[in-house]
Length: 192
Image (cartoon, rainbow, N blue to C red; front, side, top):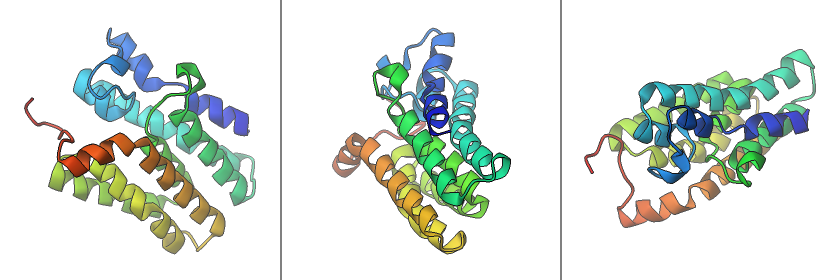
């Protein structure tokens, strides 16, 4: 199950969708394979498709572990973390990948839809205020462990997922954090 979670999540949907449009997104825009860079370099519909597929590869392993296999929540969390890891460190792209935000959101939706809704609201509020995807993602990731703890029955395994997923998102955004601190992080919709 864990191997399946990793390999499913390692499929670089953003990269593949970009190639369908004749674009290597690793060499365009931010160089990331996530939905934000797909939006910048390819377009809205491919970006939405990338977002849904990346979230789906986080949701599916958790859903299968919990509902189909009836496993303990710890196994669902392990499957989710493996999926986030697979997306961020894809074996198909020399262990490089996306930043794990959409995949983490998919995992979160499988664990606690209420916490996922709250994280989405935080992301949307931050994005509407700043138009900066990375800032919005970091703010949502920061809140993730707290929301999971208070809204998902204070389960320690869920708290572990929240902390590790947030840590991985912050690690993947380390260059963005430097740009945010220097005021150089680009905004969606800003003219170049």
